[in-house]
Length: 320
Image 1 (cartoon, rainbow, N blue to C red):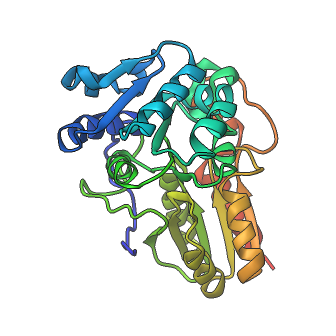
Image 2 (cartoon, one colour):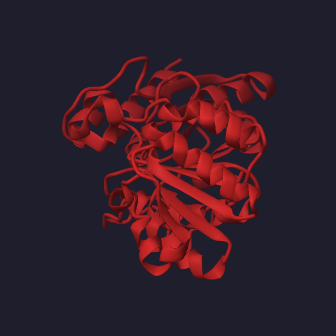
C-alpha cells in the first residue's frame, strides 16, 4: 500500500501503548468474548481502560507472568479471545517457556501485548528493556508479530490482532511518538505500507524508527538521493514481495529497528533478500549489546538509533 508521505506531521502523538489501551477498550463492546489479563501494570499498559468498562472480563494476575500466560491460554482454550499484557521483557523473557508450551505449541488464540519495548523506556534501565522480544516471538511457530509506528497504526494493529485467529505478539513503546498516519491508519497483517517513493535506496523500518526513516529520507532528498520508505509493521509474516520489489527497483536497502542486531526484522529481511534478490544492505539497530540507563533521547543517540544514522548508512551503501 502506497501513501506518498513527504514529511511527518508536526504534532507528537500518544505512545503506542496508550493507543492500544484506548482501542482495546473500544473493541470490548464489539467482541463479547474478549477477555484481558494484566501482570499488575495495567496503569502502564493502559489495559485499565478496558477493565474500567468491562470489569467482569478483566483479570489482574499480579506480578506472575508464567501464571498470566497459563490463565490466558486456558481462557483461550475455553473459546475466549485472550489478551495478555505486561512489559514486553516480562512477557517474552520471563515466561517464554510457558508461551512456547501453552500458546505456540497448541496454537491457542492468545494475543500477547508487550509494552515498554526497546531502549526508549529510558531511565528504567536494561533490566526492563525488551531488546530481544521480536526475535523470541518470531522464533515461535504460528506467531504473528506486529510493531506499529504511531498511535493510529497501533489502534489499527489492535483491531487486526483481535480479528486474526491464532497467537499474536503486539509490541508497543513507552514514549510519545510522532504521528505518521491519519486517524484511520490502514494496517493489513503481512502487507507493508510504502510511505514514500524513491528509486535510489529503500529505508525499511518499524516502530519508532519509521518516523526517523521519514526524517532521514527528507535529509537525503536535499542531497538529491530519493529514498523509498517502507513501514514493515508486520515482522512475521514478512511482506517478502515488498522487499523483493524494493531490491529490484532501488540500489540498496537500509533496515532500521529498535532491537538487537540478531533475530529481529533485519535478520528476516536479509533472509528474504538472500533468497529472492541479493543486494547491498545496511542495518541500523542496537547492535550486540545491552543498553544503560538514561533519558530516551540520550540512549537513542548513544546507540545509534537516529535519522542521522540512517542517512549515514544510506550514503555508505550508495558511495560505490
